[in-house]
Image (cartoon, rainbow, N blue to C red; front, side, top):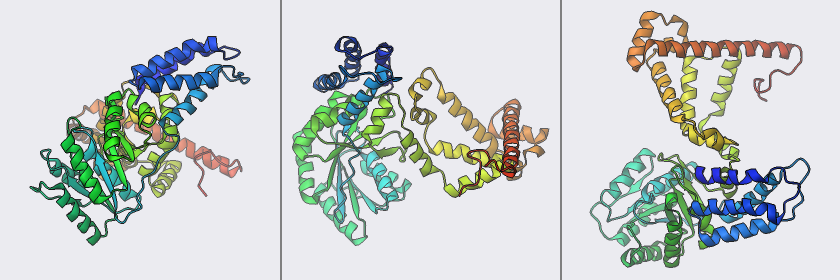
Length: 449
């Protein structure tokens, strides 16, 4: 996410180190590099120019705090200005109606249908009762796609196959929502390859009928400055309330995110970070600025972990680890929980300095290794997972064949697991000794109160 921009910005900070004071002359070259990095990321020219002017005005003449590098101080100024550029704080959704109506608009291929399902899932987790409405009567299979996604997340979808009157579909959907106590309606509307009068007029008529609390423009983050032009046109026609940036997990240069709020005045409210329905999150300007500057996003990482890890299961697992009773079955559960958190690249990218760690690293190879490990454990019986010491040669040959790996690969997994078990047992014994002596135990392994 914004890897190219992040790397170039960090390179721009290197020549600031060692300065006793930040002056106009010694900061000019670095800010020139920052400006070039923004322009290469497809940030709007005026937005980039104004951004640099603000940073320069706040940087020049600032006394360097003792033990703090000038580069770090300018990074702080850049961070604050990036946050302001992205919208200061997360702009929540207005869902005051009953039912509250949300219109998803945008060009063809921007990800409206997928984002509609992702939004419905997010609202369901927040205690809402969403209804998806297939209001795209032009794109082949658009209704079927939304219906399929709705079944995956167990949310009702209002579909009228063969109906071409969007307003009729909307009226019936409103009646259906009221009759079935659905308090949020998400309209997946039609898109075009480019903005045209018929598209705009249809959306205006739909808006006037359903009177939505939110009109969200769905934009592909990779489109750069063109996304700003699209946003301007839609805003002029419909008065959008905000936008959703999709495909942020791709090689997006960042121009759309950094230009949208400044040019349109409308906040980015949500972001799509992957292909799965769970890869969707509220857009937090401060966290995004930290990611762009290579500072990571620990808050989002903790939130993601909290969503996937059950507290009671975590306590049970901690107890087993402390007693040295951690089994291959527990290890399999840990692998699956980690997969739920997202790709390794996305997890590492949220760590401070994660962007540097990702340079030249082939995390896809490690992810494939996790898949092979999962396959090996799944090829075992429950008894074998819980007591791997019974795995003799015939059993190992059977498991290797069943999981499509060599016996040596299986042996390697078992050896690593055995080493991990031994380490856990030693830590458990050390914990007990420290508790007996009143030392309080090893941090992180003591009982929670």
